[in-house]
Image (cartoon, rainbow, N blue to C red; front, top):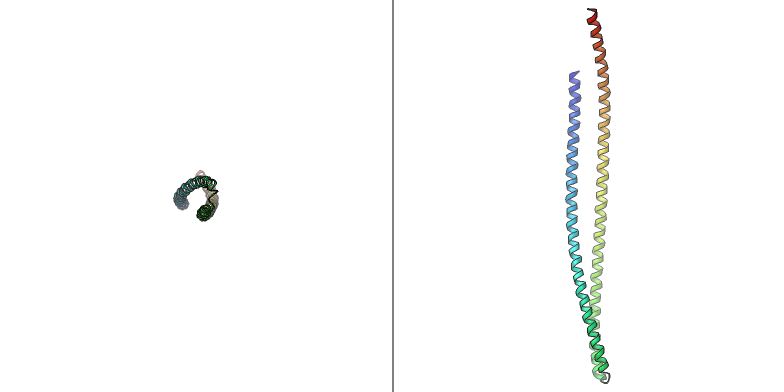
Length: 185
């Protein structure tokens, strides 16, 4: 009977060791997830830096537009002054058209850069969604695994408690029989 109790204790110790190993593995997985989040935070910091650079570029572009507006005001004043000089006016209008073409080129480049920024942002949003999905799958799978292990442990404990109960009943019957024999002797 002591041997059986030792076996039961041994099995319980093995189950406890298995659970502790599982607990350690879970902690390691959580540490890996924390590392992954740290990497994601770094990437977001880099993205924030890029957006700051883009904001600076837009500020420079705004300054250029303000300067262009000042130039347009100056050109309008000159056109009013030069209404009598049609020949030179035509030449200056052609120069103005060249500047407008440059501005259109710059605007086209700005629109292209804005499209690239939007595409990058879309890629970041997609990657963020993938990270959320992966994290959700890991959390769900981990909870399911823990629940399955706990059910198995519960079933084994129920089996062993029934066996211990049966052994206790037998022991009580044996003690009662020994006491009867001792009282007769």
